[in-house]
Length: 289
Image (cartoon, rainbow, N blue to C red):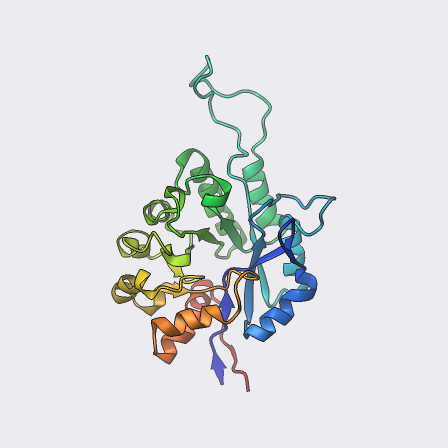
């Protein structure tokens, strides 16, 4: 008998001043205890790196790729990239050369790292945290070039490269309106609206980001079902996915959130992984005995 895989969309791995999660040793036991079949992993938000530095082998996109390569059937890595590390197209105010073509030797590290993460490292998507990393998710000068390049890369690698966005509505940088604006302009990209607007985005979630077909509402750490009830009524169970935000949240929390939202067994299976699996072309797995 087959079932949809349980997919956890959201898990941080690595080592910094406030966290020690050695994914090489700890991730698979965590997944097995949680009953997770496929785990999306990303760097710790605090102090993220592009390339893994010599002084800490547990940071950086290379570390995420290493964990993915250790467990290729169960782990999918998400890149974290600084959108500000781009060369401007023209001189900007208050330069006396404002509007003229920018002609200094500044590389576009942001887009170079996008290429490296998906063409060389083989990662499966992008993690964006507008609040903690300080940028509006729909800020056209820096975000639009990234999305345009990601759309090209998606065609090039021949698979969906999802974007997991911290979307708690805790700042205008990741409001439901901002995420909806982004999704409207890049319909080929699949956006996971993490935390589903909890808590301050819940008032207008259904009217903005949730209305787009290329947005899934990710119920990660969204314990208040009133936040998403209107979206559930309008768009149905197929709008949702879920993760843990581990290792900071217990593995039992996502299931409790989903089970509180719906009592229908089929809908629960879809939210726990079936919806995302179908979006990504992931097959069913053999049911556990």
